Length: 214
Ligand SMILES: Nc1ncnc2c1ncn2[C@@H]1O[C@H](COP(=O)(O)OP(=O)(O)OP(=O)(O)O)[C@@H](O)[C@H]1O
Ligand SMILES: [Mg+2]
Image 1 (cartoon, helix red, strand yellow):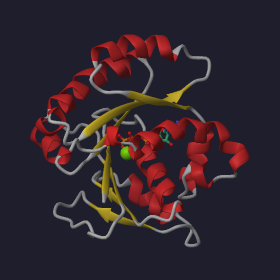
Image 2: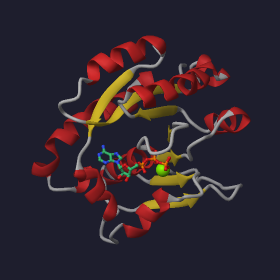
Image 3: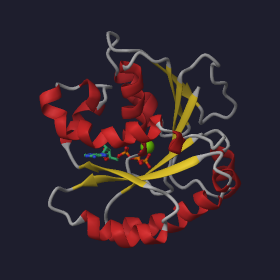
């Protein structure tokens, strides 16, 4: 069973978008997928409610209410998390994940705000021992934005976490989310660019680099 957590202390960075798209991807590949929503806002569970019944099935768990149990026969467990987790709560969350994806918005303000958070995640015992692995992605990038310059100076500060992809800003995510779908389930001609941008994320998650060191 693979467990993947999408995490950032900052609200609106794309946690639910990344979590639901990952769930959609693995489900369409024929896997048994559990989407655990740890956020009382329950965006991921709302997404699941909108999901048409004919689509590859995904089970939802409301983890915001306290105790919950993940079925052992799941292939993938994807955790969507609330904003503003810190301290003991953050360390408790990190115990559940093998792979942690941190989406960051590519603005100087958001990157600055994310830096101490990413550092706290990297300082976590399990992460420091490589029992859980971390990667960053930039989300909602405008095509004409000089993202690489911004990211470069940012990543020098958080260089222990690989930066694996840039997701562009596009209504495809909004339209897919309204219908309880991921971009993987939209007509391929409309999402070619987006699928290319997901490719390195999927490859990282498939590789040993995203899994606990032996
Ligand atoms: N790449 C993108 N392109 C366009 N819109 C996006 C993109 N990523 C996210 N959004 C939109 O931005 C908004 C915030 O995204 P999302 O809900 O995924 O963030 P979040 O980190 O889960 O927020 P919260 O902290 O409130 O849970 C949503 O309306 C979502 O549809
Ligand atoms: Mg959310």
